[in-house]
Length: 223
Image 1: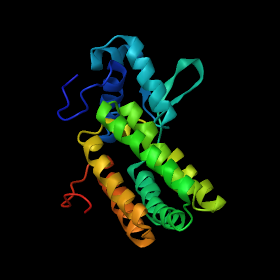
Image 2: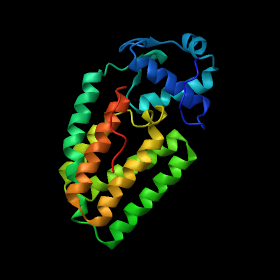
Image 3: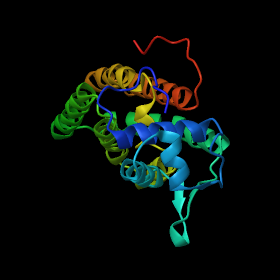
Image 4: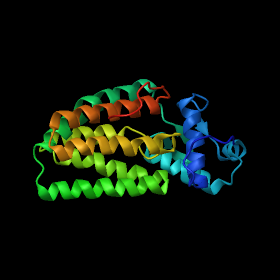
């Protein structure tokens, strides 16, 4: 397996396997519907079966592979068009959820989101993608839960279920940029500026889409 420059330093073997498999899926080298055979994966990744099995379970949790009968594992047929559609809907719904939440936050709620934000910061410092992924999910989920709309909670939750949010944290450079973007949203939240919070959440999601889809961005970050 080739070394991937810029990935977090603390990746386990299973996370490295997950990164490589995910990248090969995104590049089309492992095509949708293709059967994944352990013997071939061991040779491809130059690893033992144990971390590869764990990587496959994580990719299954992200909806990227499917375990069929008789221990058959196949690449899920979810196209880049599907991911683009999910992000398009997120860019519409999550800025609404954060704007609604800002207008509803009391002192207790502010303390909870500050705690989640601090936990995300600690996760970023750890450099562990799996830890960052869970902290990031909790941070985003908070705004939907505080939006006061059960529909937003339901719709956003379904969109996240279609994203490879557990594995996309192994994308080179992803972890470092996220901390600054979360802080930019939090600055607006502390100011009680719903419009600014929505604007910065929109930037955050659009930047995530570009990185996941392998596109470059001319933006340096959200100020």
